[in-house]
Length: 146
Image 1 (cartoon, rainbow, N blue to C red):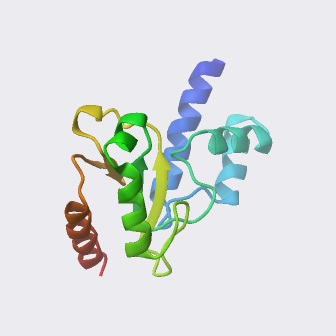
Image 2: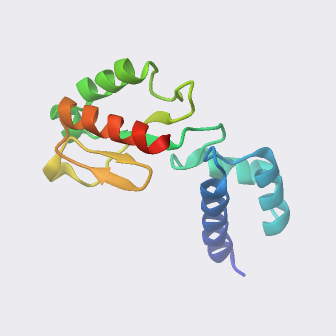
C-alpha cells in the first residue's frame, strides 16, 4: 500500500471510529490503535486528527452544530446567528452543553454561498438561516434527543 492509499484509508478509519463513538470524538485508544494498524507513530496520527476540523480529540454532543464562517456567510449574518445560539444554548463556540446534546463549532466554507448563511448539524446542511429557523430547529432537536 503506497502512502496516498494509506493516508486515505487512515482518514476513513478515523471517521468511522469517531462516528461510532457516542460522544463523537477520537479517544486515546483509537489514536493508539490507528498508529499500530497503519504502522505510523502516535504523533503522526495526532497530526492528522488535529489538522482536519471534522475530527475532534475531545467529547462532543449528540448534535454538532457547525456555523459557516466564510466571508459570504459572515456578510449575511452568521456572526449574529452564532451569538444567538451561544445565548440560547448557554455556551461559546467550541463547547458542549452540560446535558451533552449540543456542541457548537465554527467551520470554514460549506459551499452554500448562494443560500447564506448556512450551517451543518452532524451531516445535514441548513441554509438561508434566520433566528426563527434556528429556534425551531433547536427545539426539534431537543425533543428528538429525549
